[in-house]
Image (cartoon, rainbow, N blue to C red; front, side, top):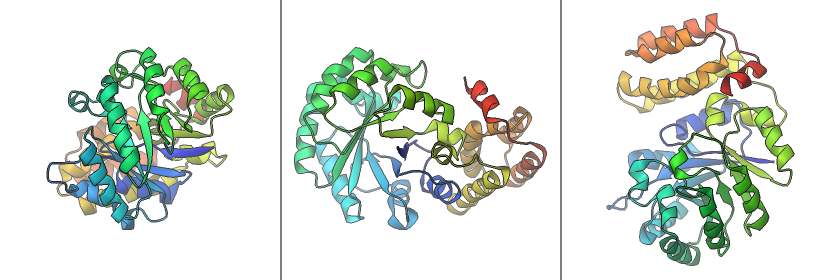
Length: 321
């Protein structure tokens, strides 16, 4: 089974990915949160740091592009090729309203004729391998049958399917019937993405779809950084590993970002996913959320790791459900 790290905007940047790789590993590909081409044609500071080869050593890294403009896609892909990249990913999955209202991300799925013309050109003119990460429609999963006919016309590196529609965001449950139909009819290799939070989730998925050879995990990894290692038969994360992982991420943000508020915003976001790994975590989660100074935060973290133990994996699965 190949396992990919999903690109999650604002969270799985190069600092997080580097710490994850160093402490736990287990991923075959690391997808970079989307690059959104701008009018000047330059990478933003965040985007440039995310794709710099020096910040991704030892990892097969795939930048993701968010656009509905052919010229922007091709220009960005050409620049990424100059950095040494061999593959890019097209974002047709972002459900954010600010993205969708511009006809990008999952919003592009509402315009199949425009999408097909876009794909015609990029698959003809782009020198890099192209994979596509998509949702199954805007309003209803029945939309995906027609979308799949379009996707089948192009030689994708792989088609990564998150079987929710845009209006679901991350609510409801993935539509596994649509995914099963896609698995039967797709001419491209498929990768599954959606709601794999635990090893047990993975086993249930594998039992239902034994022919699938690739999965992508995102929120499940944020909640348990050792998830990919565990799926491969490795051990669960222990407190020492989680402390080291935390310290690497925290040190990276302190080094790269200016001001306590900015650093703590990033750490609070990480803990909003990871705190349930620990027993009786809510008291400390509230303390972390209230922190306004790094010095205070550091003391809270010391107490947290000192006073709380990791929960049993079965208890954690029940809490997720």
